Every structure is written in C-alpha cells, then in structure tokens.
Length: 600
Image (cartoon, rainbow, N blue to C red):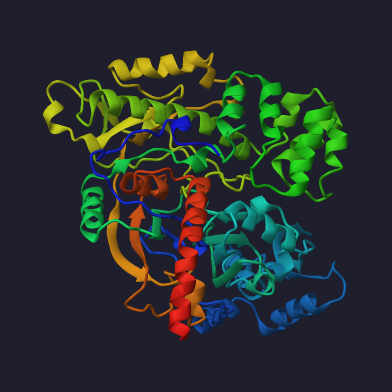
C-alpha cells in the first residue's frame, strides 16, 4: 500500500523520543470514535427505542379552536374524511381583517398539519377562506406539532459513513443525499454519529434490518444537520502488544500531551492504492487531462480491497477500453464511482472523458483535487520543519484570536478508505479567515503552535518568506502553477484554506493494561454497554500489554497522525496487519501452553 513518505509524512515533533511500538486496529473495537456536537456533547448510542410522541398543548388547542364555530370545524372534519380528493369547504371571512384570517390559517395548520391547505380567495365580492385536501401524498401525513426532521444516532462497525447513507437510502427508496450528517467517520473501527432525514418516521428506520449498523436515539427537530456541524471527535484507541517499559510509555505520552503532533493529512486522505492514489486523479483534473483522470479512477489495483465486481470491471475496461463490456461486470443497481464513470462513457462515447468525470457527484470529484492540495501541504510542512525546526520566522502566517480553522472538504465519498477518520467541514470563505504575518516586531510574541500554512488555492495568502517558493517549486514539478487552481469551470475552482502546522490533543488520558488472549476485547462499545456486556477478567499473569488512549481532537485532525508521533512507525493498515500476523504466529504456541496449564 501507500507509504507515509510517499505523501510527504516524514517529520516528528519529538524525534529524539523513542516512543513505543504496538499494533493498532487489530480488532474493530480497538478504534472507537464518538462525534462531538457543537455544544460539546459526546454522541453515544443510548437506546434503540421509538421516540415518545409530543404531547398536545391544551392551552394552544383552546385558543386555536375559538377562532371558528363548532359547526365550521365539523364541516372541516368532513373534508378530511371525504373520499374525494377535491373535497373542500368555503368560509366567509369578509368581516375579518388580515390578522383575523391569519389566525384561522394557523388554527387549520395546528389541527390538521399538512393534511389540509387553506387559501384566501375573492368570490362574488366576498372574501372566502377555502379549506381543502392536500393532493401531495408526501405532505398529507405529517403532524403539525412534530418536527420536520427525524434525527437519529448511527452506531456502525467496519462500515464507512457514506456506505451507511447509501444503504439506508436504498432501503427507504430515497436518494442518499437526502440524508444529512456532520462528518465522515473511520471505516475500520466502531463509531457513533448523528444523522437526520426530512419527513421520515422513526418507525421506518426502526424496522430496517441492517448488518453491522444500529440506529437509535430518535427524535424530531425543526432543523437539519449540516456538514461541519460538529466541534470534533472523541477517540478511544487500544494499542496492543506493547513491550516498552511503562515509564517510557508515560514519558512519551506526556511529551505528546505537552507538545502536540505534526498536523499532517493522514493516509486516509489519499486512498489505499499505491498504483493509483487519489492525488494522481486530482493532479490530472487540475491539468485538465480528463483522460488521465478517468484512467486513474478505472485503473486496476492489485492488492486493494474492493468488491470482486468492481475489480473485474476495472480489469475489463483497462484491457478493452470498452465501457459497455466493463459494465456487464457490475450489478444493475451499482452505485460505485467506477460504475458512474463507465455508464457515462457507454452512453456518451468511450472517449468522452470530461463528461464521464461529471457523472461523479461534485463533492466526490473534489476529493481527488483536495487530495492533491493535501499532498502539497504535507510536503511543505515537512520541509519547513526539517530545515527550520519549530521556531517562528518573519513572514510566517499565524492565527489571531477568535479564528476557527475550517478546511475545504466534501460531503460524499464512495471510496471506503477515503477521508475516514477526519471530520469533514465545509469551506469557510477565505476572506473571513483572519491570519496575519509574523514581523520582526512581533516575532518573539508568536508561538509556533499558532502558525498555519495554506492549502494551495487562488484566494489565500502565502508566507512572506522562502516557504512560498516551495509551493511554486512543487507545483512546477507537476506541470502546475497557482493559476490552475482558478478554473473557468467553478466545479474545480479552489479557493484554498489554512491549516495549523501542529495539532493539539484535548482531554488526553491513558492507562496501561494487560490481557491474556491475543484477541481479547479491551474496550466496550456503545452497543456492548446497551447489551450489558462486560470485558473479560484478566489474570495477574497475563502475557500481553496494551495502552488504552482516550482523547479529543478538533475537526480535520487525524488520530493516526497522533499515534504516529508516539509510536514512531507507519500507520498504514497493511503495516499493522503484517505486525499482527507476525506477533500472532510467534505468540500462538506460548498462548496455547498457557491455556493448557490453566485447564490442568
């Protein structure tokens, strides 16, 4: 798979600290993520019950009832029960002013919701208020005193956020983009977050049969979630098979707590393929090389985890360049990026690469360009640290008080490894991002952890020192310039943004624990707690040691980059899978002997 060095990840804050080695993500339960909402609440799955219906407001009911006589209300009731969709009643309101008519409209809305409409019309020199049945079936069943949006908690295991959205959308027979959420969460782990859907009943979701996905904490609200409506994520992570002495572990974690970590974009940003990382397509899009962009998406990737059908479709297209033939490898309802591109090529021509790209949702397409921006940012940060260390320089950019860092990002991703642990956030107009340049006068007052570097774009400031030249040099190596980020086609126009060089960890705690079996659960998930599960009791003579980390990160910060700082090793899944295999095989005979002695 892709290595950290290939995406510019090379430096450490505390390079002299040896840290400790171990295995991450051995079990899905070893990597748990909880979304933190804008009020600072950690989202947890607390129940899977249906919500209680809102109680009626008797005071309001009496006030609304009084605006019309009981005879008129009886006629309106008859409209509701009438078989004909054209049933209606006309009320003479000539003697009422606008305020009086408004009270009647509100009363009809209060009692009947969207089942009935009410309009004021002129008829025979009279003012008539007409009440009739709504013909829009979707609107006819929504209660007036119930919020328009169903909010619910999603607990998932080894499923990525966009797949959850796609699965729920398919089962409810609705478009995936009708389901809103605040950010994507890691695939390889157990994660909890909030989602919402407009005008859907909790009973519909409660009855769904879902694999490795549990829904709950249903409630109705009058507002929708939006991408970026979160203040961060809380992580609980187990690092297994640690052999470092406890004192050294504590020393390295205390250094991390004090100094932070290099705020790199993690490997998830770039996909898992060595042969076709996402930034290759991003660079091709910026160069307007549509053919190469499509080829990088459809290129076969040996060793990458994907469905057998997608794998076969890639191989077929690559060898034949026949989109129709490749499409036969995919199921009819396939919603993959490859399927969308192949379908467009088949319908519009095998050489219509530009149109094929636009068959991909814009937010998904921008993933590729954002990956290229992130690659440049990583490389510039590494060079800045390697050549000038952790001291501010004249011309650097720094944050002023009240600045909230936001990063241009996406809402959707069909790539299961893409953007998994980062909390996505909507881009904030760069003109609103208040950054200043370090001067000789304020140099001693600025701290390094206040410094930012820009993601390349056409509407950001660059440092007024040698760092700015590095951006240009890296772009020139790829045949690009900053002008390429200002596209005539707004679908690819990139304003740029700012990102802090250092990431800081909040509410950081840890514990060192022992366990006896290589595969023992070490952390209880939300679902475990709901089911009253308990962790296995460990004997005093347990042969393995683990470190359990608990911490919070701001949106757009990667937990794997924090782990890298203390473990001083690759964070790629393939690397830790190899460690697991090696450790498991070497310890297996020893573990069997322990079990044998215990049995005796």
